Image (cartoon, rainbow, N blue to C red; front, side, top):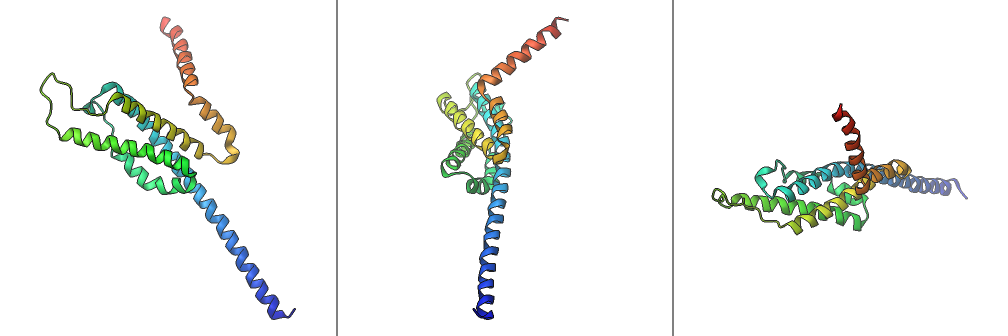
Length: 188
């Protein structure tokens, strides 16, 4: 083989190798951006789930301080990174949760444009209890998906601990323990 052939072969191998390195670095950047987006989305979905639960109880937009339009702002900012990071099924579930929140924002805006009810009448409030319950379930599922996505593969132990802490039975147990610990203090 001549030196020219070796030089051309070296250039080709170098180009392929550098392309491979760039691909690995780009994938790493996408994953990092996806995990960061997942963390931000998780924190916002905690707030959203709580707001939906409060809305189910209060059934009055005026009793809420939630800015329903703010959910769309974060989704617009972080949605692309998260969608590139998650599988199609999971990305669809998280996007569906944000669409539920957007629907609530539109409903709030429409109800606010209607004339105020007379004194003593119930406030303008359209979404029914079954719909709000379904939205709460969708947001809860998206919240868990984003929590799982926010960890690296070697952080499984930390992820399992957080997921276990968020399980409904564990939350109920923690609340019972807190109430049990407060009773002796109150008795003194």
